[in-house]
Length: 360
Image 1 (cartoon, rainbow, N blue to C red):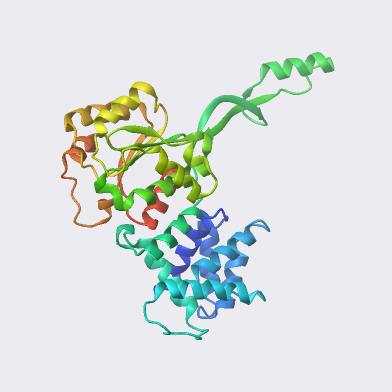
Image 2 (cartoon, one colour):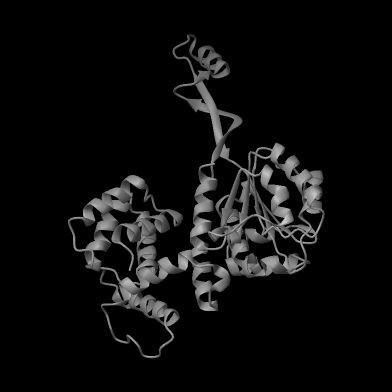
């Protein structure tokens, strides 16, 4: 089992993904509280986290759900039956030895927590079907924040530039200038354009990437556009707007005509830049860089994209390994135009990508 501090930091990150206000300061308060408690006591950990990580009543149901999932269902409330069901479910998925650990009420919590932490960092291409389903369930809980940018619209404010129109209207209505009205620019989420490679070399990661795309669209439907790239460019944002991830993925599978083909990213970026725009957006390209087209064309189009976009982030599943080198023709052509090259092989990598988009 991992150290308590690392374990609880991962739990706080899971809560933030679920929408709970478990920020850095609250996490530090929890760690200080646990210094005075028995960390093997599930009830003490539950109440310490509930009192320090939750900001209000709205956070409590989400906290309970995350605690049940993260710690295998061991929590200090009278509702023991439902939580035991979650514990048994995790144990069945985790094990292969029939009957082992059956009826042991003391081990599921640390085992479940340890297993969730292991799954967060494992390569999704190497997971079993049950483990991949668990990772996809955690992705469905991910709440993707978004960096904000100043818009052209204004809103009333106590400080800021003088709002002449409102000040004059007030003076005409009251017969005197009783107060100077002020205004400031509103903010809106910075748009994201996501390109998901669905070629044959990306087949082990395509479904997980599309589920991450679904989480992005669900969090900011008006500020997210998603395209699949392979042998052709296919917009799939409308299909990903379905609330249920399974329904959304089923619609996406019908819309994409070039599953498991090759990758001609240079031609598709040229088509995108001719038909659409990425001005002011964060452009995210999820691909392994195995370009079947002309790498020189890809480099040219990446340069055009970089000049339009606010940032260009390339997500490569193989970047998660220490010995990775961007040696493919596509990666070498794209690398000079990237702001970030990040991993995209695990749940933890997608959580880090989500935080990067929230603080770009």
